[in-house]
Image (cartoon, rainbow, N blue to C red):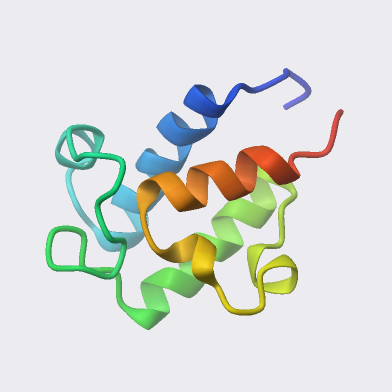
Length: 92
């Protein structure tokens, strides 16, 4: 897509991707607080689901989280991932 995304739009798309990767209902993930841990009990991403999510983020947004954030601190929560992706979006 060539549209300009704001952080809110990025977060909405990421929530959908998180739901798909974690095999959760989109409405459930959409209703979670932004500080919900991605690997915590409410979302429960596995390592494999995390890799799947990172691939989807790279394909959709062109942001290679694993290459840009070696410690993967951005995968702490919905908010940290949204902030990281929004900050690294390339202008289209």
